[in-house]
Amino acid sequence: MSKSRVVVAIDGPAGAGKSTVSKLLAQELNYLLLDTGALYRCVGLAATRAGVEAEPAKVAEVAQQLAANSSIEFRRNEDGSQSVWLDGEDVSVAIRTPENSQAASRVSAIPEVRAALMDLQRSVGDKGGVVVEGRDIGTVVFPQAPAKFFLTASVNTRSARRHKELLARGDTTSLEEVAADVKERDRRDSTRPVAPLKQADDAVLVDSTEQTIDEVVQLMAEAVRRIEGE
Image (cartoon, rainbow, N blue to C red; front, side, top):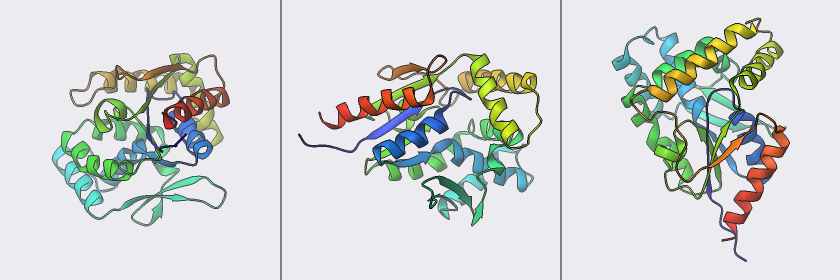
């Protein structure tokens, strides 16, 4: 039976484990990982550093320049992990702070920013064999993707996971603060006028509240392999 490498779209709310699942799934399938959230995080970081994060028009200019210059790139490390680079600087850690998470959520609601990064995302996905995660991948970026998943978990579970990640990085943000941040991002992402967070009609709902990361990855991998063989 022939095997066709496809686009795998994974959407879901903050803290659902999309980044971890996407990375492991890409490794399992030997696919490229395109972390769209990292793209917006890079725009948020660049805009903040430029002092224009509160000015939508200037944020759009930052995004357009980054896209035009291909300033954002993903590099595969020797250990198989992937790092994110902005203008030649490894910003893998810098883009994951709570402050920058909020900045990324805000800039992603700017239509011109989304337009600037859309073609970049699609050009990578056009060849297939790519795992893409975000909040509007299956609904807006790759609506025709053969494999779509909506990964979620309870607010308490997502908050606890995010808190654990931050503690591992030496961040002392309290669990209560993390939970408030998760709830605020849920509200903003699901109610924004441009590409709001929602499950695509043909996406498979995966609730990871009671499942391990490995169980989720295997469930998705089996589904993708079935689609590859169709």
